[in-house]
Image (tube, rainbow, N blue to C red; front, side, top):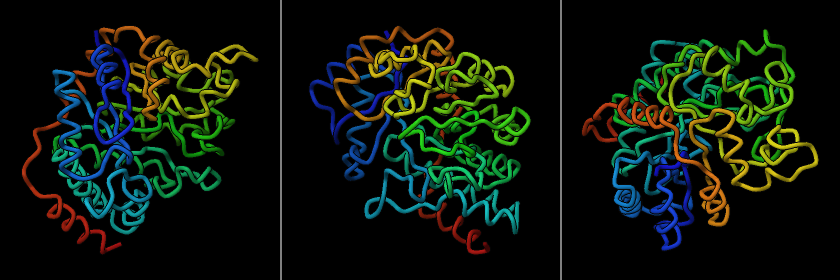
Length: 347
């Protein structure tokens, strides 16, 4: 019985407790972090062990954006540029920037595919707001929705050609949040009309295979619940933005979900301090899968004990997302990166 969960793990290989828990729960996928990566051979062994345990082509995710968000770093892996660099080039030469962004995605895909990682949590479609918290900052392509849309599409095109799956984030938009949702619950009070600039890139790239929600309360959409926990916002994502792919929550461990104002539990209740309750609240709101990143075993056990079987609709979206990616090719990472760098030199 597959469960609608994407789970992390503690170290560079599966321990026996994790192996038993994952075997019994059959999570929909896994996510890797810096603590899980040591060398190319070690990562390949780890991803192989996760697929052998699942007995299927399980999605294995990573946050490899480039810039300050990169789990794979030198000396074993090359550094990649942040999103802002491509936006700066777009201001001078849009077509060149789009091609540079596509080549960068092909380089990322070649790197990840070689390691057995088949999903990158990218492109970030958050429109940068000068007054917003720097948790987004230079990770964003631009302050202009059209630029974010065009470069986000280029990332997905590169990923698809390179044989990995992309995840658009943080739907319906994190750019104008004044707080870091890792630490607290951001509340965005912009009007519905003002929010259109945040929604635009997600509308234009609504055919993406996967998306990740924002742990943010948008008072114009639902004043009482953050997006991840709001059936109203999830319905908006599906039927107004038009996203039909696999929808995952952002990390269950982020403090935004433990805030009483998140809407997942009655005021004064500590229900969402329990990770099983957090997972259920995400799923009940309409997320296809709940994401838990820390690898904390007691938290994962609570989540697994609470989670139901994956829904038929979510299972179908998962299959479609894995079918979305192309076969990739054998072009080395360095070749794609050199072609990218030649274009970025024009910035």
